[in-house]
Amino acid sequence: MMAYIFAVAAAVGVVALAALLFRLAGKGSDDPEPGGPSAGHAGSMLSAMFLLVFAIAIIVPWTTADAARQNTHAESQAAIDAYWSATDLPDPDLVRAGLRDYVAFVVRDEWPVMGQGRMDPVSTERLEALRTRVTAIETTDADALNAKAEVLEHLAALAAARAQRTADAATTPPSGVLVLTILTGVVVIVFPFLAGARPRGAAILPLVAMAAMLGFGTYLTADISHVFDGPLAVGPDAFRTALQQFARISGGV
Image (cartoon, rainbow, N blue to C red; front, side, top):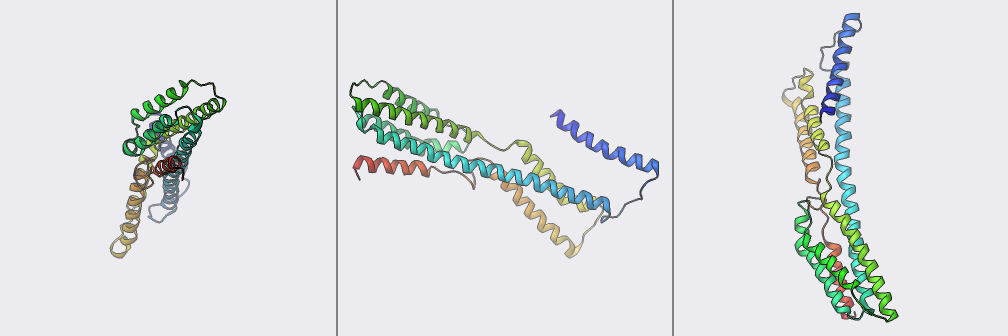
């Protein structure tokens, strides 16, 4: 935090020092006009800064949500593959029941809490118990041994995808990005007044429209900051599809 404060203070100090040196050297001329070069330069730079920060605040959650959505499909596909591979196990129904319980629990109980940035430890326990159950299967049949190895491989992929989903649930843009978005947005809105302009009547309408749009955009950056909550929220559609696949495989359809 102190580094940020020092950086801001150093930048302000550079402006003050430059103004003092140029005044002592007698260079340049006074620039009190709201539309003068000083105000114009500062206004364009502030607008560029806001657009840069705003783009980061939008793009980071968007790309994170897209990656998280793809990961849910990878996790659900691993569950489906494990379900298929369990066919040649000595007791396939026991393993398949564990997969159904895990996926159903994710959809029904875990997904609502993921919007709060956390996972339900019960689903982790169920997945670990399922892996332990498969590992403990004893058989000498070649097909069963191959099936056991395949199921464990798919469960490992499922666990890896779940670990990524855990990371996605806790991922948010850096807090400084939202703060900087709000700060630069406010400065862009009040800049004409800071520069000395006093818009009245119809001249203030564009400023009001800009302020409304900036306010909406800033709220949007906060609203989409969580992968599993808000307008960009990733839903459990892939896991619902897996449950449908389970039913189709078990029914032989």
